[in-house]
Each structure stands twice: as structure tokens, then as C-alpha cells.
Amino acid sequence: MPYTAIHARSEIQRPVSNTFIILTVLTALLINGLPWEGIWLKLRPDFVAVVLLYWCMHKPWRLGIGISWTVGILADVADASLFGQHALAYTVLAFGGVVLNHRLQMFDLRQQTTHVFGILVIAYSVYAMVHWLVNGYVSWMYFLGCLTSTLLWPPLCIMFQAMRQKPVDRE
Amino acid sequence: MESTQSFRFFNRGPSPMVRLVFFAVLSMLLLFVDARFRYLESTRSVLSILVSPIQRVAAWPGDLWHLVGDLYVTQSRQHSLIAENEGLNLQHQLDAAQLLQLQSLLAENQQLRNLVELPLSKDFTTQLVEILYAERDVFKRRVLVNKGENANIRIGQVVMDDVGIVGQITRVYPWLSEITLITDKDHAVPIQISRNGLRAIVFGAGDTSQLSLRYMPVSADVQAGDILVTSGIDGIYPPGIPVAKVIKVERDPAYPFANVTCLPVAGVDTHRHLLVLSDMPELPERPTEMSTQGSVDKRAKTKRKN
Image 1: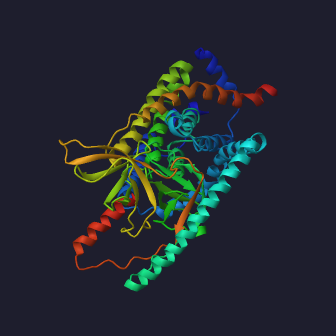
Image 2: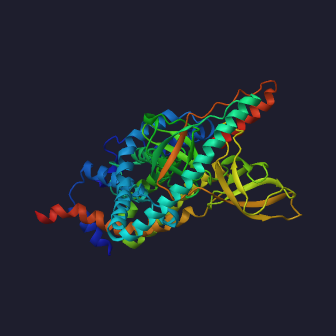
Image 3: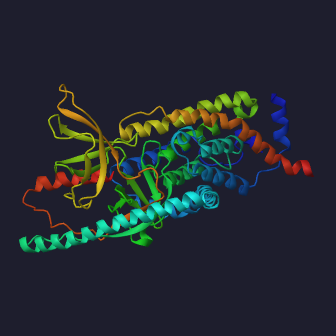
């Protein structure tokens, strides 16, 4: 996808409603909460992380680091992991998204995905590091989820853009 | 709209860097407090009320899957169901005969215990719970079930299925509770080998559905096929309930301890319905003359809960 296409598209997009943002985050939490087991759990992309990253990059003043942290705390409760584990990872992730906001907007989808991969790797290593500090061993299994999350980025990105654009096309 | 942000006409609050540092420090503080002191359990249970609707909805597909499976079984496999029913009837009759024997043995045992003035071993009651979902961490073996404080579930209660020990309640939310399975890493169950009464402790392996008997001397009398039952001397697990079966014993003279691998007897990973034991008999209070001993025990217990 060339640079102009994305740029042109983002200009005619109608403003995103808060409800839509909240709904996407809730849906991501829901999908994360599905009964994943065994190998599927290891391969499961972190939907919440990808959705948060999307909004941090596209609407950094609507969904920023603070909200990402709050969602992280909720994810901690849902997963019964240590308080702050997801929160810390999502904070770093949101920071990456907000800081790279301008740059990422100008990239085409492939370049975006490469950057998203980097951010996700950092976020996942935060997660793995917490695990290492608490449990005393590092697990490389975490990074499988990082790969699948990156693979999730392009379809999710295209889907969100399409969903945001639809009402404009109708008018 | 967002393109104006770099000019900073409007006060948008602290910069991302400040926010990052603030929230990162906050998270680390929470991590430290939660990992070391566990002060935040009440906060967690309050927040869990917020999250639980999402979790309930997320459990629907699984429920639907089971429902469809049940429907399929009832619709298309009536013959096998009839056969299964007959088998169960037969099993029931056999069991009933054995149960009669057991009751006479119980009576006899009570009488004998009365004679030698030993306290009677009391019965316990059970509560049926249903697994909602497994915890989404590859390295933990924990499940959440559908009853919590509302059904009087307490931390430390033992969970079993129809054949053996499955785990222990480790966290209680208003409507949920968390069971740590015996296969969780470092989860310890005090056991006795039913063949010779040898006491030991069986630990969860964590990454597989196996258990291991640690600190068994090379010379210890353990054989493949031995059944491990709870010893009941810890005051948490009731005595005499099957826990695991020894499947492999490796004795390497180079190491002081034998490497004993066991498999849980209960369907730790398979069932949807479990039994929570309540009204456990109280053990007589621990002798207190050795304070160091007590503190060591306490530490061991908290470690087990973690």
C-alpha cells in the first residue's frame, strides 16, 4: 500500500467515537479471555496489546499511556497474574505507540508492521523480564505470541480503517 | 486535528516521557507489593467484579461447544449410551457390595478406635463446582471455578474429583475462586505410599502434567506402580485420598536422591466439574514449645500457597 493511499484515507475518516474505542478494547479483552489452551495459548496473539497500540498510534490524545495502564491492570486481574505485570508492558507499549505516532502514520503498512514488531518485542520482553524477576527463569515461549501479534497487525489495521471509513462512504 | 499537537497551543498535560516514567514506577511498585506482601487481594477482588462480566461472556463459546457435544452424544450415540448405562449399573452394583463391606469395616474401626481411645476420623462434606476457564499463563496450572465467597469457599480448601486430589483453593473472589492444581510448579502435597506407608512430599512439575517425588533417598522403597495417597499430617489434605501413581523410578548412584516421576490419579486436566471439600476435621493444635519449628512450618505453608 503506497504512502499516499493511507494518507488520503486518514483525511476523510470521520472522527472516532469514544464508544467505538471502548468497544474495541472490550472486545480485545474478551477475545483474550476465550478459553485458549495448550499450544494455542502460546501462539495466541495479545489482542489487547495490538488494539491498544493501534489507538495509541492513531489517537494518542484519546487513548494514551494512562488508559493503557488501566487496561493493563484489568488484564492483570483477568489473568490473575501479578498486579502490574500487564500494566507495565502496556505502558511501555503505549509509550512506543505515542512516540512513534507521527512517523508510523507516514509509513506504509509493511513498514508499520516492522516497527510494530519492534515495539511488541520490547513490550513482551518487559513481560518476560517480570516473569524472570519473580520466578527466576526466563521463558522464550513468550516471544511466540509476539510474532503472532505482529501478524495480527496488518489485518486489524485494515479492518479498523475500513470500519472507520464506512459511514463516510454511505453519505 | 492531531497534527497540531506538536505546536502545543493547548495544554495537553505532562509529556509522554513523564507519563511513561510515572506509570512504569507505579506498575513496579504494585509488582513489588503484590509479589512480596500480597496486600492487594481485596483490591483484586473488587476489580474482579468489573472484569467478571467479560470473563463470563468469554466462557460462552466453550459452554456452547460442550452443549453441542452433549447434544451430539444424546442424538447420535444412543446405543453407546445404553451400553455405558449398563456398564455403570454393573459398576454400581459391584461398588454397592464393596460399600456394604466398607460400612461394616467403618463400624468396626470406630469400635476399635473407641476401645483404644483414639479420636474418630471425621467425615467431610463436599461442594460441586464447575470450571469456568483455565488461567491464561502457560507456566501456571490454575483454573477458576464458578463459586467464591458467595458459596462460602475458603482459601486452603482441598479440591478433588471422583478419584483423587486435583488441587487446592488459593484465591477467593466474590463469585469465583482460583484452584492451583497439584501439577503447578512447586505445589506440594504431603503423601504416603499406600503399599508401605512411607511418607514423602510430591511436587508439581509445572510444565507437564507430571508430579515428582523429591528428596527420596536412592535406597527408598519406591517402585513403579505404587499408589501415593495423602498422609493427612499437614492438616490441609484429608488422609487417604489417592494423589498419584509412580510411573518411573530412576536411581543414579551419582546423585543422593532418586528421580521419581508420577502421574496424577485424578483427571487434573480433563474434568469440568470438581468437588471442594469443606468441614475438614480440625487437627489438634500444634505443640508450641519450639518456636523456630513453628516459623519454619509457617514459611513452608505460605510458600505452598504461592
